[in-house]
Length: 464
Image 1 (cartoon, rainbow, N blue to C red):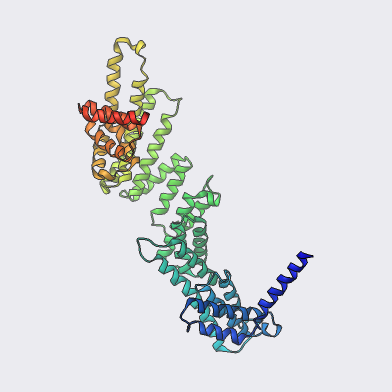
Image 2: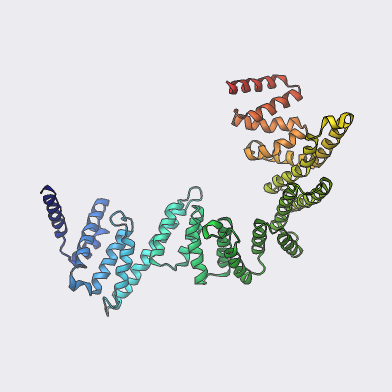
């Protein structure tokens, strides 16, 4: 019995609450008109609640349903709620547009031209409001609010799904938030509309292809990149002279291990554009990866493998050098080239480490020295670039960069550079035991026993 009484109580309470509104369209409109005249947030909110309550009841009254004015007022009421009061009704945007769209339709016919014009103005004003809010959120390059901007663009697109500004900048904002699935939807819609100028069309194609290539799992395309290649083909037809698209084709060929195809495409493009940094970089990466693959091939004879690696890594290194001739401070090219130098020297250090002392007997030292010297010779140029890069970055050098460079200094026995670069890392993280051991040994080599002892004490403390 108690549950029945409770249900009846709730029903009566709801009926009483609902009955305070009579479905007066005029009261809804007058309450809405007063909103702009009131100064406090509480007063404006109360008036909007009254307007909402009246218009919600009004559309339940049969005689109002076919009146254009009913829907015009409802559109305005919910537009006002959508502008800053979405907590009152999260679906205010949708309800506003649904109401506006009924004005002058078969459901609510009217000959009132002014009302129809004002309806269109209301729709446009609501769309503009959200676009402006998005722009405000993006203002200030130091701390743009991308999340709020995306919400506002999405609200704008609920009103006008084909708004090119909302789609273009909404896609950009979605990218900044790594919401690539949303960005792709917007960019695809823009490409289907086909109403952008050439510059923006090219930009949308490039952004869309870049997302697809780097996030192929989003479109289930990682196995063969057929969807991405299809979009690339369309883009190349429209922009045949843009080098971006052939570069992506080369990257796809490299991803799919189609080495021969990638080499042909790169060489063809470089014949037409020999100063293209992206192509030169891709060529260097391609040959570096090819060298790694050959190094892992157990079926090749050692001499044949070494000859092949020398040629392939030389091509990679020379291509990186070509990049640096055009862009001397290209950090990625410097670091990647240093890795190529290390790969070039690695087989000789590996062979030296695997020498059989007993088998060689008296020839062991001579062969060991020969292999070490061969490896060091191949690293000699890398040392120059490593020191230059280290000096360029100074205290701002990253941990990844330190990890890449310090083996060069260690192998080359450049202890001053080794101490300089590892000291920076130890200041940041004194718990790195590998770096501490190498740094201590470097201090001993330069006979700086005081600092060697200091490092040893840190090692002991870490071991406790």
